[in-house]
Amino acid sequence: MPAKLLEGKIIADSLKAKIKAEVDGLKTKHNRAPKLLAVQIGENASSSVYVKAQKKVAESLGIEYELKVLPETFSQAQAEALIKELNNDKNITAIILQLPVPKGIDAKILVKGIAPEKDAEGMHPENLGKILLGNYKIGPCTAMAVMELLESTKINLYGKEAVVVGHSEIVGKPLSLMLLNKFATTTVCHIGTGQRGTLPEHVKRAEVLIVAVGKAGIVKGDWVKEGGIVIDVGINKVGDKIVGDVEFGPASERASYITPVPGGVGPLTTAILMRNTVELFKAGA
Ligand code: NAP
Image (cartoon, rainbow, N blue to C red):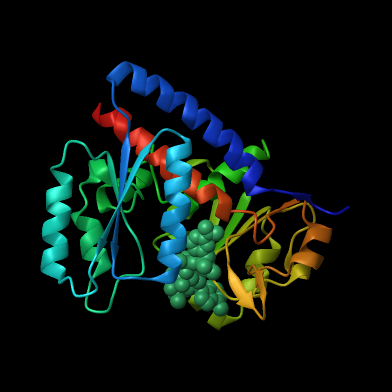
């Protein structure tokens, strides 16, 4: 039987409705709104698309949104100084650094410079550490979006075989900790697994499979376990089409649930960014 589609937009809409109600309540209680500030260094077409979407979603939820575009020529020291200044601005709830940044700017240092209590993307080491300890309200948006999609299936992850393909700091690594926190038996595959040739072996065991690599069709449809859940994070341009990392057609014949690409994880990430902002506001209010 073909898999049920896990459509991020539907889940994002219900999450946004909850966030809006919460923001309305917080505004009444504190007489001010949460504010998300985005820092963009230089002009970049993909960043411009993201910031437009962020502004639209934030404002629809009653969250204030400000974009600071810094000149391409901004130095690392100037950017670090600006972030310090923003950390001390009481009117700002949360800060996000838009990626990519121009050559010569070290984004990792800038992200570490964002105060943990203003870290909209949950990427500060202190916030990542809270995930390790299983005590967190905010986290990297894509990893949190995957957990939200899994939760929407109402399937208990306790003891399930989960396989995460890709171990990036932004998706795979935090996600594997989140799955462990739910007592899933979690395997993380990466380039070493791929080079050793054991990727299919691991994937075939997965009752819950999450793929975040960025290589179209790296996971073949016939590797997917019958009845498994497939979350495909990958975004790849093939010709004029956007496809994921999993061969969707054959995989959807075997899985119980599968995310479409586009339309799966993507639409949820901005909603999670807003939820992080609201959580930071509540923690600091
Ligand atoms: P990334 O930093 O490039 O990480 C990719 C991961 O895949 C790395 O851990 C890499 O291992 C691993 N890998 C590469 N080749 C492999 C192979 N043959 N077998 C097994 N693992 C392999 O990418 P990312 O930022 O995590 O993003 C991954 C994908 O998700 C991209 O397509 C990106 O566009 C997409 N994405 C989507 C969203 C969304 O909102 N939907 C958000 C973020 C990212 P090594 O590090 O060891 O090389």
